[in-house]
Image (cartoon, rainbow over all chains, first blue to last red; front, side):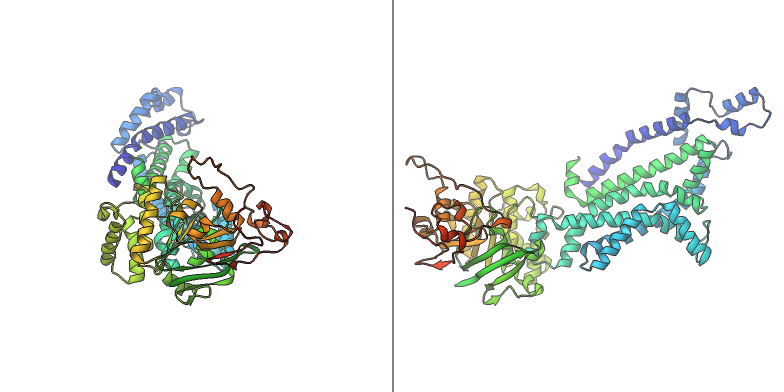
Length: 309
Length: 318
């Protein structure tokens, strides 16, 4: 039953991928500005310009450019970066691991700490603890990442010198970026966990669980948590893509290499192939995240498994 | 032999007191009906007996509940847990929402025997299959691997009953067990409960608003109104010679066939909500027998020949 669900769910990715590729291609080509202008030396003739335009196929109709782009991608060729003058695939290969490492660490941090905090705040009878967690959730949901990043750098890198100010050398360089991204993530996950747990506790069947004489902890971990995790898993899955893309500003502030910094630089230079490649990677991450989320939902909830196939 | 007795039970949620005087006894092999309109405190009584009021934010402010000689109102939560599901089982109103939708049927029933009888998972499963069989559930072994949403309401209610029975309890509290079911299934479930009381020597507290269910199955009845027991007694006496005007009105609401030309009556007005219980007898604003005394003094539950009635002017309807 689950396999069937996964199969159909993967099948649905095909039209989604096509739409995404069209949109990415279109957006990039509708942007004002021209990379060729960046490449030409001062004093170049119109003929030089025409030769360069022809070299990158920019004189072809958009449809032809799109089809070429897609076909090349299937061969692992994401084109040649116009400004950086290297294959886009290489650029992505160099930068992606940094983003993945940061993303995975931030993801693990926000899920584990977020779920734990949310559970504590939903189950504690201690008003101080509850207020503290609620305050933290409010703060975490509202403080912007780039500002927090600057504060963390100021406190822990400049003043205390516990962690490097920037760069990506070694595991200690990962701590501050992970905290920055994770702070908002923890708050989000904690909030969803808290609300979902409190909702689950109001379900009818919980009365009967108590009536069976089950201890409160058994009810919490064996019955309430699986219910509360349904929305949490959805949120986390959406965050897989968001963290990879949302790390953009954070990577920039910390001067880390990664998909985000690559994208920002390429955008500034109108480097179409690089922008396309990066956006495609991020879109892929969101798609995969959603897929993982849906499959996890189906694995956890028998009603979902049966409803969609 | 009385296993469970409730004396002058009062329940409060903050400053509000939705239950202000309920007393009854129930013996093994006996079915006690608790009837009343919505909002009369029937379900709260069930929750109080199960010790589950704190879940809803309520607490017992006065009175006592004794089970098998043991006072329950002062019991620790840990000790209460051993009774719940172990010696006192609960059947809830809506089978559609009373099972965990993420778990198969089997484990949900097994848990009771594992918890209260100290069985291994395998022993508990064997017991579950056996109980499901006695509840006339077809193919019980496969049912164990099904999820709640794959079953009908009547089936689910049987599963709930199986959970309540799994540890061989002495008392079963059934809170409107048939309200959410369709009529043919209602009859099956009521018959099933009736059989269980006899075959297992259970004490059944059957909470319902359906007087015809009471007439069919109960040995004795408690009639509740606005958080108080207003009349109680053997089911025959209550139906043949009700003393309280509210009981008489309730019985007047039962359709009795078409040939005697009798008109079906309702009760004028509505049940007062817990926030505006009237002073004196809670029923006096709707009572055509009411006199001055009814509006000022709360009538006590006074024993009579076979039961008890809380009315200043009791008596068979003129």
